[in-house]
Image (cartoon, rainbow, N blue to C red; front, side, top):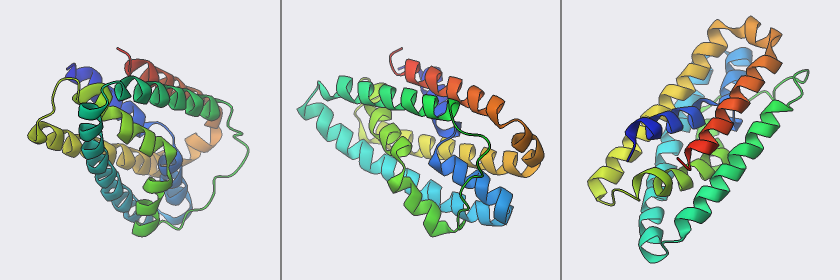
Length: 191
């Protein structure tokens, strides 16, 4: 397993814009850092839970249906390219939706977030399970990915706090950069 590619992939997918990250940024801008952190804690716990569920399901599926790997890689790559396109063409003149910024809203968002669900279902068959199926390694992977997600969420809180005015003045450039990162992440699934 190429650990560097795995870590870069996890970081890029979790740090690029998606419903959770946009909600975090919106919460920082509208309700402050404290509320955004409450949201982030809920999102992180749900993210870890989804990763654990996905690891168990993927471990079972990969032993029963070995061809599931290619299907999950295709679905994950196509969805990330779709997200990149959506981010690229996003109307930057519209205001983001105000989020309540609670622990529970952050928690629930993860289960409704197609980017997170797709990521959690594809990261294991793409990077972990072809090389490791031991429970210990899969568990460590869940913990590491959850920590990467938590760091990524906090980057959005920090960016929202520090660069609020800059981000509002350069939304299109930021969207293009984030879209390119998602395209790169979609390509990394196949490397």
